[in-house]
Length: 475
Image (cartoon, rainbow, N blue to C red; front, side):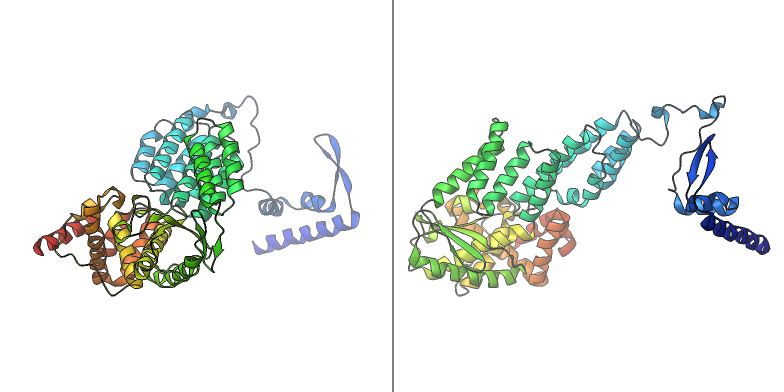
């Protein structure tokens, strides 16, 4: 065997030398003269076994087979619908199983195979997956959708149904990320959707609000108004225009002051006397509350003060600011003069909401966790007077799951200290690191309940039941 291989190699080397010496020459191919270059000639002169190896090295692995003679029955192609390798109607049950298990990537891969092989069932399967993804995103469970981006990118955009589906999913994803203050990802997905369709209403609205977040009010208004001309019935675009115009009116007479990590604006005229202390307090919050969350944003965050709205101990948390962070920190400041510690605590509290939204990536979590952490952050501004639950826990913890804006003043006065006590119980069990891990896991998993179970070894409902029992025993 070795002697035969050596002989073949010897012939091959001789052919190489001859080819290089002779140069280009003609050869008949299918009855017509074709000029062969030395490298082509080399392969044509090599013995068959070596030539076969050379072709395996050079040519693509998937090579179409030569057509069979017309008389050969094997050459007749089977109808595509009968191809057993093409997922068709029988794959519908499999697709439902994957979506039920939230195996988004596998579901997208199955749909992609159906589309590429021309299955008649593929368009229905694509619609099914698209509706599922939009529903998941709307419910705050978009992290698995983000994790399946690779499978989304592999869908064949040449298919007429794929491009609109991708625009819809990417647009909804960008809108959800915008609401979660995840501005970088929102812009990434909105631009990807715009590359597929420049006229989509949802995508235009997201890009307009991103321009508003960056402080370019004029560009934001132009973007949203242009979109509204294309889609006069779009609620999102109408809302975008109204929001930009409202911001412009609010800040029309206001200059903007900056510090290393914040941009401060006022509703109405500038409160020059209070501006510098406010920025100093914000910078302290950046360090101290940032240490609580282990999160330090690199960009400057916008802050709006409302001097015209009354500031008093009973109005520290108006309904529009209860746990809400829309990309701007909004704080009432009328009457704050002379209440330095209270105002300082409020700034720490509201900055904590901004960090909570960023670390959890906007995934839905109970208000008691959000407000409780904000109250823990507030204590770092004024640690002298924590508010006790004098009569135990007056409200079931489950009652504190929705935003506190829906609570009356009497209930709110009990809800804030109770939420803080709930967070303190979590800190007592696992330290501040456990709460930080809970927030990070919530953002990464896209599911607060699963994250809570993973960190504390019990469900949130079980924790709430034991916390409520503790409150009843303290009465």
